[in-house]
Length: 264
Image 1 (cartoon, rainbow, N blue to C red):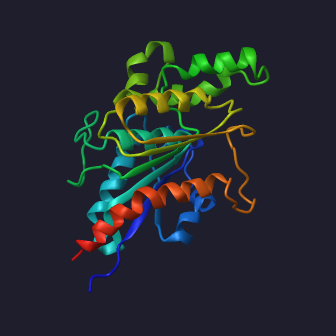
Image 2: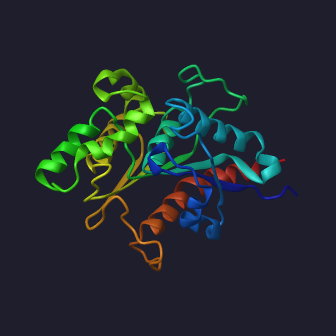
């Protein structure tokens, strides 16, 4: 009898593309207690490389999990990706580029496709061409204490240059421009009062996904900011992580069952 292979969640941290600490995943470990394996990645920061290196690293992480799935005890197909903030941007890029073999002169180490079965995006920048305008709107109408220019440095460093002179790079780094019917289901979470990644980023992405026929769920937390949950609060039916677990169960367990049935 073949050993069970577990569905897996690949967690992508945020920190403005600038910091790496794999311990960050420990704050999002709940899937481990409900039958899911978890993995995370140390992708290259903006101190080491610029776009698209970070996307390449995350896509290679998916290939790694698939290539070694037997050794790791994982399902090869029931892999979800969960990204927060800048990590949400990278997770969205991975999920919507799943069938693209060579993204921006990518040199893949392994032959497997970098596709995933589901994507969870928390406070994710999905369109880097509109985020500055949205931040200015917030500054003028909702949050005058948060100046937009303080928030844009991370994107300037990510694309290695002034935003107004690098519109093509911003488009290439925006997952909204790659959405199509072949994308996996997506769960979007956003705090209504987010002053770092405006909530409009999730609104626009949901609209684009729906138009393409991609299953999508959007939850906006009315009293939340960029961090719209408290880590030490007990889980209840309204907690964002409960919605994550429900989403994973809905979209990974069926894929995992098929994977285990065919496992050898």
